[in-house]
Length: 389
Image (cartoon, rainbow, N blue to C red; front, side, top):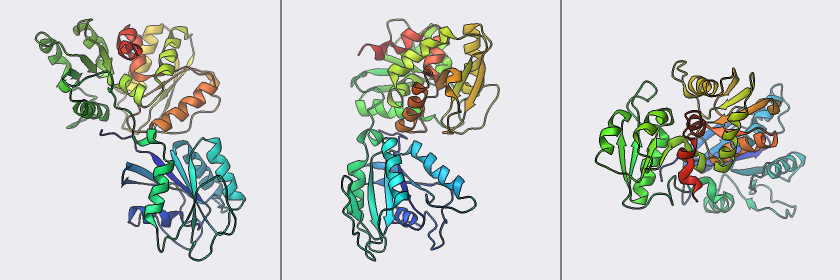
């Protein structure tokens, strides 16, 4: 299935351990600058490659955790921040393990990140210590054993990070007809479909179902002669589409589909109901997961959802917007609700780590599609298909 759930493989270690050389060896390109000068890598460097039997992954080259230069503290912080995005960690070290390496291993464990060790420059110095409880690969970037390295990546990379279930697997059968409502308006990208739409179409092709793509203005006429097994709409068109689609035909949105694949569907279900408990002046956290040019009139997260929430509750609410995968704000407990986008541009791991922090702070979490459906009085209908099983 076409998807952007590229697992992130973080390459960690001290300065001059050979992290950048390992990245270049894996990619077969000069992706990262290699130098004998300590501290060459300053910010995390990302490179997308296709790994055999795994698919596309994002390799992340990080700064050395022993950087004590003037900017070293900030570099190390960014290295540790990248743990939030990692599905797998590879610890590269030369010589013997020391306290910096041990601290990294403890951080991997604390973040529940699977990892293995690469003893680099092993052609120059063999490893003396017997390291137990973790896989250690003897390696040299001058004479790399790529099959062994790829084998360990495949062994430790969680399958769920690169082989998620299909968006509609188990809910749509071969031969079914599914209507995808795709409005073409000011918020639609010129000349292309957005990723949730593309991924849903591909999943339907894999299932053997027919994907019928219509604009919202074409839907009513089509339904006069067709009875599809399901209608999936852009969340922003929920109100209109709900008024057109007969009640016997299941209806949901692309964002709600992604709440299952990229997030925690049950947590979103429970969190959405917290909208009814919002009070005057409550703080709401809107969580985007990508960067985009903001259209203040039509932006879904910054303009429309805040307006719908305030109209539904009749309360004046305060909103904080978190862009891309920026760190969550301090003192999360001050927020009465968080609303996560569908997450088509990020991995499930990245969203689940966000949700875990919010859950720990006691903050209910909804997602864009569920919030929009709730504010328009169609929450039960929009989620019914997935609550049946």
